[in-house]
Amino acid sequence: MSDQRKIIFLHLPKTGGTTLVNMLHQKYGLQQSQIISGDKDSQLREALDKSIPFLHGHFSYQLIELLREHNYFSATLLRDPVERVISRYVHLQHSDEPRLKEERDSYSNFEDYLQSNYAQNWQCQMLGGRPHSKADSKIAYQGALQNLHSFDWVGVAENLNEGLLDLSLKLGFKNVYYPYLNRRKSEKLWQTIYKEHAEEIADLNKVDQQLYEAAQKIYLKNKNIPASALLKMKFKEIFGPSQPKLKV
Image (cartoon, rainbow, N blue to C red):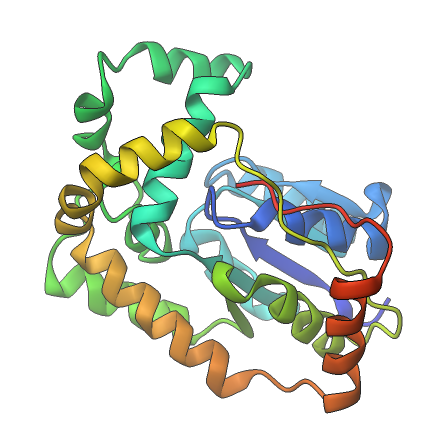
């Protein structure tokens, strides 16, 4: 596999990244994929030693910088911060993963969760390479924005299907896998939180909102999808067989 086909995906939680990972697993296979957990450069170096072409995980921009000399295609995906914060909380309520259950038990209520780093400009924290630090300043935003512009591909959750088509074409895939969107685990809880807390969440995530709007502009500027491929995608969305949905 050529250097142009190697990819590292910085997976920001609850942005639609699981759908993107599933698509790339279809292309690379599980044996040619490795999860990087957190900012552990030892895991990254191990993957490089094995020449693994598809790397992905919940890590910060720090690891992206380490790969510059290895010619990996870098990608990330952002989401409206209000939706992302709510979806992560709903996910916590249903997760059986020990680490997430422990985190869930540490919050007495939703308001308690809103005081955590995960609910306040988390996308800016991760893209700025400074996880678990308050990213509410102009300096933090500028750093994250600069890093965002360095990615080879930036997508947004609201245009996920179209974005995955664009990414597939940029990676040189001829046969494109078309996912479709999943229902939320608890629509009632999601909508209740949105109705009661949307304004409060938005106020706590002003920097993330700026970053998300920048990501939208980057995506629209750089996408390059032939009309025939876009038409084929739209046809499959309407008439195609059942397709797997986005986990949000």
